[in-house]
Image (cartoon, rainbow, N blue to C red; front, side, top):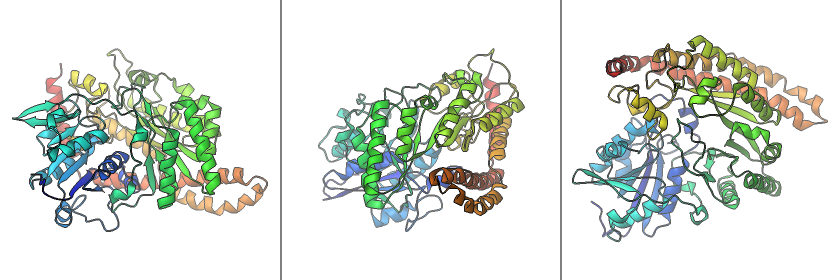
Length: 524
């Protein structure tokens, strides 16, 4: 129970650890999620509240480790929390989230969860799995009102945007309007993330996305903060932590084109004034390559890497995703980014299910061939190939469930919803096992052991830079790109090898066979 007699209360916000074997673990211990930091910063501004964020994926330094993630027994003994929040932005972490939530709930701690996972039936699932309150939508305003309600200054039922159980019934309050005045929110305070060592800092300016992709849970009209606010985030991090590497998490960096260019010029001028060179990564639409003024502004601002959702080089799959580009046009646009000097990280979804039963039957080998050809022609520097994931709250999940194609959670649980595992029955003539093997064949051709030797070769060629004394910048780019890519591709080989070894020891293939049996019995 909440003790209102205490002079100060503690709010702990937890970002659950990824499943035991996950290809994202390599980057997770270098960064953190922005959402929990924003929520924690808001609570930290409240009177009589102490706040901390525990990112179980970045638990370094003096972080108390358990058998998995953090040692919450130790944390609760050292610094007892009165309220614990959970970040449910990644569906694959949900089983861990529920395990930790039950731990705290059994000890009388109030538990709150929020994030993209909690949609539809998942609200009841959460409330029956150790969560007292589910925050629906953005949480900065909701969390303040919810915490005030625990001290008797606010009635629970009057708080918009939450769900809770009352006499075994799920109660959902009125929806809360999306936040539009971002400048009224405090600048995210990364000092609240305990035990983490952050090398790449996430920052953001735009929430929402109007692209309406079938597989994506991010919907709604984009809402934009001011460029001054985004620049202030960078200033604070550089001046406080000497941060140099940033990831702008906006789904589409090029939205609000004129304002984006203005921000790039502001960031360029700030770096010139401080004489600090920054490295920025953004997610951006492929067709922004048609805007040379935007690309020039981005390069001048220190934006070196663009992450682009190519999704697929197969035109029929692009149509199913609601994408409106042709593969041949995509290749030309990708090359534009390459010519402007950007490092291009390509993101793909292999084996996307067609919408029409009359869609062409494309063999597995043909699919693999198209991917390899596309990646080579587009000159993509690094790739990420995942399987389709019917995430909660997406049109893709609704479609596949209606077709009785999604594997039962009793067989294939939420922990497998990270893009590395087949989650549903694919289109004929493919099998789920073939999809997973094919995905790793594409990645395996790209990330290979041979790049370990290429790293050394590039190091020995560095003295050739002397021939570019007339244009050091051009010479550096010509040398750096292949060296950097060799390093990334060798690192990718290490990650894939580790994942494969752990996968072979798992029981997933047996679980998959059970799931296939159950689904095929119920399909017409």
